[in-house]
Image (cartoon, rainbow, N blue to C red):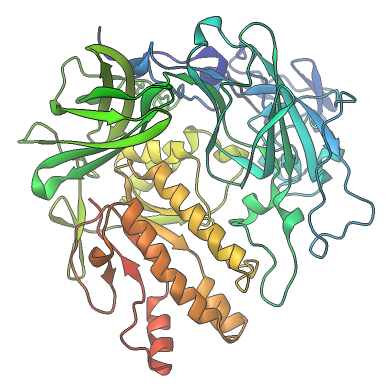
Length: 611
């Protein structure tokens, strides 16, 4: 059988997970169970100030024409690819969720008081209107408090009082196929904005506090295979945890405007079934200069016995099946080549019961892979398989590009040749940006302007931005949410720096296989805030410099560059490592600060070249 990656979309989560209605700058999300809109266009003026959206009435300007868009607003692929079947399967939990707002204590003062506790969800009442996941429940108040902000009024069915809700519970019922019994079952959230508590069938299974990055929770022992399961997600808005001080107010990473405003589940949710003995992670290292493809594979054994397994891997050409028109070119439709471009030598590894183990596979390429670059963004799918007693028990897919970035003096080298990066930058996020259609249009416009690089600024963007960049040959400077331009980070609190470490490591882990990512931008304007706004309070600059070194280490180890490979703007040149660590846009200012304080030989802007 041809190892397709995705020959068609899943109805539940892909094509129909968000439908789009355009008219005088307004759109609305529709439940995943709602069929696609049938009429391609309707220009009949409405005589009333309201229009009907699948049984919901939304306010419209008197006599305004309405254009109805018949396509999927946010086409997306399944989390589990077809080449991973039948060992892995998924269920998308996007769509209509119930919502139960929770009132804040009457005497609570945000910024002064500790965050209030989230009381347990009540059996009732739940709001009549559903929340359409993925979307923040308070999205209509971004960016115009009166809902008059053009395309920011995205969900006209959401009640006005949701816009000020800071705590709440989201509820979804689901069923699990009986044949999943005996597998490991996990919940995967691409992003939840705020402090989240996850409850399955009445039991708290985990907590997570981030705004932008994914997390997984094992629910194997908590789900019912016959009957209905209940999933509750309680969220406290991140700003409830703000505590105003002399220097900043937040110890979490808030990014810029969007991240600090939203609350709720704003990216996809999946239920995933995988074998008890499985590939937990694949990290692909394209060592172009050594003509070697390497894969670091992490395996998990959730069984109660020690096992010896064989691991194999094959790389197939990734072939786009997207259309050529503006509407179809953005679709995530693809397949893998019929024949493997190369195979990696088999590795045998022992995995003790209920533990993880790591193995490294590698092979010489010898011209069998085409280089990835801006003009020829060739992609491959690595399929890693696990065999137990000659029986295949798992397959895991990872997409990659055969490319390497390095330094030679002041030059950036892409696959050994000098590359000139002509870039764009943007740090706005919102519902219009929550679709592959947006980066495709943006990057197409960049290409028309002769640009080939972009800085995804002030927050981690949804992963599909990297997917589109991979496919279009756009180089990406991938940025954390360590954004200080508003003076918000609480730089005098240890919790801020610890959370920044966790956040950076999580971003790198999510994005490190994307060939488009040439560097990690680890923070934005922290140093200028310390120096020019807060006037160099004692100790803060020293703490920042100390964390520069920690962040460079994280970029080196998580991105596979060693500490000795880190390139300093004050000296070192040329190195082999996985990524560039971009620390602060103004290295010269920090150099001058160091010179004035007598620290001429300390590291400043740390970078390492990408493989």
